[in-house]
Image (cartoon, rainbow, N blue to C red):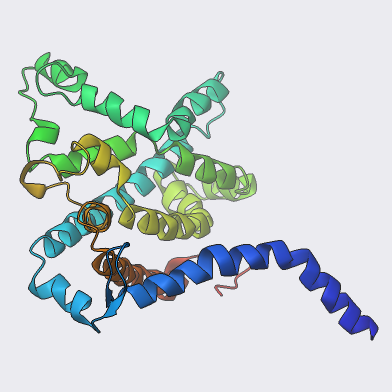
Amino acid sequence: MSKKAKDNLFGYLFISPWLLGFFGLTLGPMLFSLAASFTDYNITSKMNFIGLDNYKKMFTIDEMFLTSLWNTLYFVLFSVPATTAGAILLAVLLNQKVRGMKFFRTVFYLPSILSGVAVYFLWMQLLSPSTGMINTFLAWFGIDGPAWLFDPEWTKPSLIIMKLWSVGGGMLLYLAVLQGVSKEMYEAAELDGANIFHKFFYITLPMITPIIFFDIVTSTIGAFQIFQEAYVMTDNGSGGPANSLLFYNLHMWNNAFEIFDMGYATAMAWFLFVIVLILTFINLKFGKKWVYYEGGDRK
């Protein structure tokens, strides 16, 4: 056996645990779900091939499909820009050289590491129309607070507000990259008469665009996967008032594990996969036009 072949053999042996995990726990289930999406399958029964019927059902029979898709798109369109902007603003504020800043950084980061279910129950209490702290605070200023999770017009904004509370994870990323922005650039800008806004828009933002791009791509993918919040905060997947919190993944879960229409649920999963794949490709394509890399290479 040649030295090159021996090196290759040892290389495959070292990565064999990952290969077994990939083929057995990732690629295998993906291919199985793809095959199941073309069948009438309810876990206990034998798979019956029905072609594209599951995909046709989404647009012709399932009345809640478009509702769940719209609810998810609404959440993505508003939560991703809001959380991205919130994380950037928070990182800029916490990047100042002020006594005790480490304490504030820790405080703002803590919500992002708290247990999800516990946080959802906390926010259900805060958003209570009658006894919640938020409406109580608004009442001090003579403002009649909304019904939040009990009002179809306010349910999704409620979750977006809750999402803003945990921007600490993104804030940490931006804070790390802000630490690496050259101080000489700010000093040179000050000599040219730049004020704080000029420095932010012409130095800070361009220098952190790679992280903004990364945050937008990952946040978009994560927002499309919203499920746990709606499941916990709407009485185990009821979808909230007027199905206003019936998100795509929640509707898919109900089809898979409430009525056991696993074939249709896997078809929904693949349709969502295609949507996210297309949006990610668009982000990657247009990212080259606005993402700035210090080395000058936009690839």
